[in-house]
Length: 179
Image 1 (cartoon, rainbow, N blue to C red):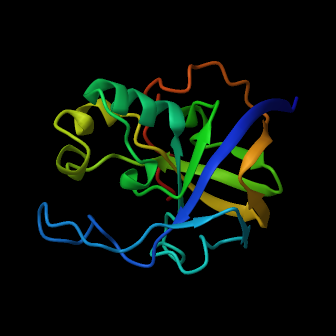
Image 2 (image 1 turned 90 degrees about the horizontal axis):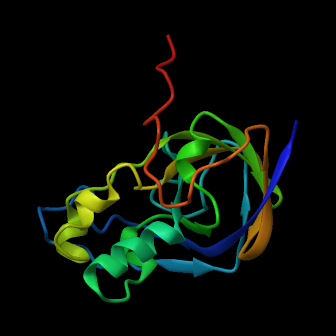
């Protein structure tokens, strides 16, 4: 049975370079987060020109609700670009999609693993952010059916019935290792 869920694609971001990962401890880079209204995704690749375009984990989705939880814990607004995730979505618990194939708009994705937060979150957003994001750092996905993804309200379709609140931690961190 196919289930349909109304979600929102809030932001689509890419960056040609790392700002945190591979950099000296707590010396962030200044690579821009490039915002897109829509993108054309190809099977087996990430966002064109992004630092992870050809990596094992080409795209990361992140929950608007988790960003709001982190911001609320600090009593301030937080720009979702600081999390350095590619696609900010609202209305779905991303942890439930680990190991699942699903469609968002015109693109078929497969949830590969939870994207663990890094200690940079405490330095860039505020102390305690890293701990709050554990199990909520986002969902690494691969594109299995290319197409156009655009910002705005859309449908997520999948075979799994999704039941968790969008800000709940991931239930399983990753897919079993292939042998």
